[in-house]
Length: 462
Image (cartoon, rainbow, N blue to C red; front, top):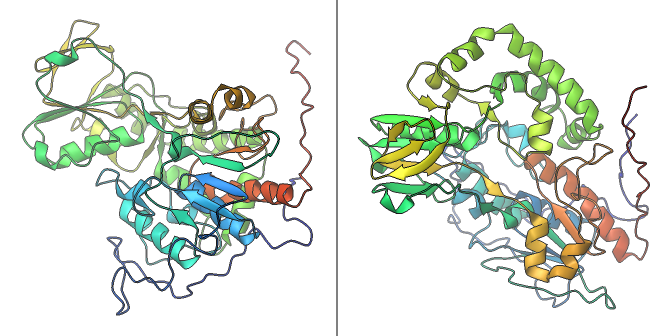
């Protein structure tokens, strides 16, 4: 049996919002839109909707990516006044400004924003950054979303007497690049860049490239380097990596997310079960598929790739917040030796022409890209913006608690008016409904009761 909060009695539906602009413009395969004779930047429906002239809002959403847009739209559906603060100049820039070859490693049907199929069949199965960016911009116009662009939250204060705001911080607003430090950086004569600033490898033809990291972005960058004809491409692996062939994932995923099932139903099927059951079911299915074709994984290991062959996708997503690779083609290039591996020793320092490793080896490079992820600590960000008193009240963000539920996210965070949101596209869309419903209940003066009676976990023999 599964139970979820569906709606609030006698209130509008959190899952329905009538578009202010009904006509959708189809996209071509490159993410460009037909203009229908009105010009590419028509403003029949503009961002900054019916709340735009207000000075006080029931809720402020920090970050206008998929989590922030989804929450803003659902608050609007419930009649809650809100504004979204987005640091970028355009809706969709959180995708538009990423590296040129960025594309999703999950399927189109998982990627919609609320209230509609944002990406109909005219889009490719694996959406590019431009598809996402332009469709997000169109969606915000179509639903008259109240978003303030080029607006960065610098600081804030909390008045416990006034109970003055409900603030939601979405994951993208708090991501800080993580880049390991190695000795003698100043001696290296080449280029060093974190993936957050990486755009393309096209200017590096004929050079030697190193990618630090082996998760999704690292594989994308390595493939870019190979396509740009660098003379050598090497991935430096620091720990074993779980590799899931995209077709393995899709065999089960597509049964839920497809053109037949309404997205609202698919979300309930996919997300409403206990995470421990999702973990057991997911690992059973994926491990069986991996055992059925061992050579695929044996070849990776022979090429020097340290493989977490029977990993747990739930742990990677819900506890580590990534670090796996959804294989959309790069693994075969590693197995064939087109992309080299350095996995037997960690880097220790730079030289003029490359990196030193703790086994004494030296790897030459002209370009080093760090695909080493981000520090996504939203509790830390809250403390930075609102001070230590707010920080001390907040729960941790992400990872599973003793009941197998995500810490902090999508529910009361420990502070009476602060909410965390984040995750993959499907999580952003689905869990925004629960944040919006909880805020609406507060606005109505009937906040939902919070369960805090988790018994301590007993460890021992039965």
